Image (cartoon, rainbow, N blue to C red; front, side, top):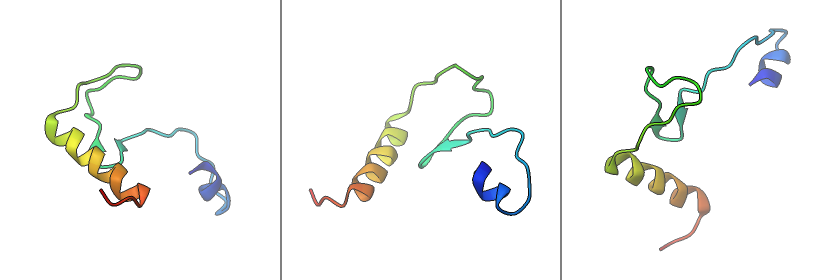
Length: 57
C-alpha cells in the first residue's frame, strides 16, 4: 500500500489491518492481541484458501 500511494505522490504514515481475507478484525482487538475465530469464520477462511489454491477437492 505504501508503494501504491507513493507512486501517486502521497506519503502513508500509518497502516492498520482491518481484515485477513474474508475475516474482519474486531475494532476492539488491540495490537498484539488475538481472538478466537467462530466456526463460520474458520469455514470462510478455509473456503478462501481453497479458492486461491486452484485445487478441486
